[in-house]
Image (tube, rainbow, N blue to C red; front, top):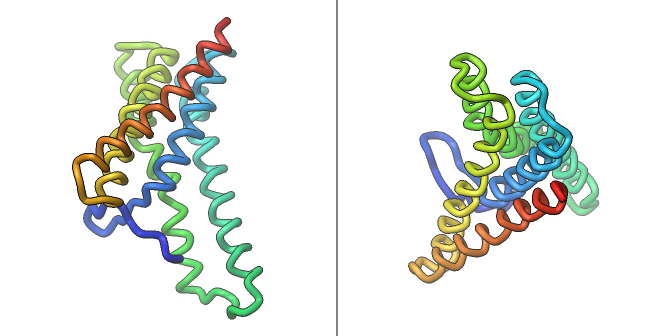
Length: 169
C-alpha cells in the first residue's frame, strides 16, 4: 500500500486521492438529491452518510481483493488488513464537517435542510481547492504546483456544480 499521505494531523495520515474521490462522490450525490428535493434533516444526514459508507466499503473491498489477486504475494496479514481499514476509513472522516453542518441546522433551526446541503456542496468545492493545492505542493514543492493543483481541483468541483445546472433545467 504505497499511498503517500498528503497531510499529517496527529496520528492521521490523510490521502489526497481519497479526499478528492470521496468529496466528488459526495458532491455529486448531493447535487442529484437537490434536484429531487430534501424533506428534512434526517434525509440530509442519510444523503451524506450513505455514499461515504458505500465508498468506504467499496474501497476496502477493492483494496483487499486487489491484494488477494496478486498471486505472487502472500495473503494479507491481520495487521495489513487493519491498515487497509484505517486507510479506507478516511471516506468516513470526510463526513464529519458535512454532518456538523446538518446537525447545527437541525438543532438551531437557523437554516433548512436544502440550505444545509447547498452549504455542504460549496464547502466540498472549497475543500477540493485546498486539497488540490496541498497535493500540487507535495508533487512539486513550488507555489506554481500548488496553484495548478488548486485550480485543477477547483475545475473538477465546478464540473460537479455544472451538473446541478443541467439537472435544474
